[in-house]
Image (cartoon, rainbow, N blue to C red; front, side, top):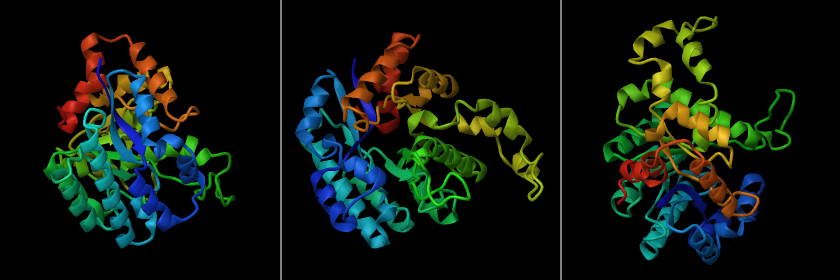
Length: 336
């Protein structure tokens, strides 16, 4: 069966060179990315892909985000180099890489909207990748609205990748997050918080055709369905500093119903229980195959292999399995 992996990460050579020129020595998650050979070794990636049969990848850049480059100009430049170099790989290997996800610099919203239009209309990108916050600023900040309106008009989805680093402490009495808690638990929280801000900002009422794909099976949301549902049906009941009850009346749907409008991928790192939880929450129609390769202990194949194992173990029909593996992606992304 065809398998279209909608969220795999790469640093094409021109992008990697430009990134090193701007950032110099990397640290934390960025250093971890650089240490994975398949991020920059295309031949190794192609050989690995051969072992999975009819397997294809949608390419996306790995962190750091263009927003972290310091200036809007630097972010724009890195974004363009990334899109141009991924588009070149897609042109050279169309059977391997049917499309790519453009990364845009949200610190320059006007430039981000312009780059989204260029990447999609001229280069063939199937959507854009943004991060769960923009250098600490939430996605529902008014200045980012033009990017979302542009994406709704283009009819392409937005991938939301979590963003948090070790300098975001787990406790107020500390300066840094220890033991990579910022990544293990912080990233699922980031993905969930970003969804909540989008929901309660009424963005999905304002732009009902806007589509979001949430990485890592939706973060914490599926597991906490009860809190998202019955809990947020009482929004404001325990809040003393703000009366949220009018907001609930202004929303056109229950909070829970908005969360089910998001799409999620299958990147659970081999957790069968997490995949089934997400599938029960979003439904087969809103789930897409993704491995998050190549960030596994084997440097690429493990997350692909384990995600396939989990999907093949699901008690679903052959038609639903086809939808998960590639048909949902083809429909949502506009891929043949």
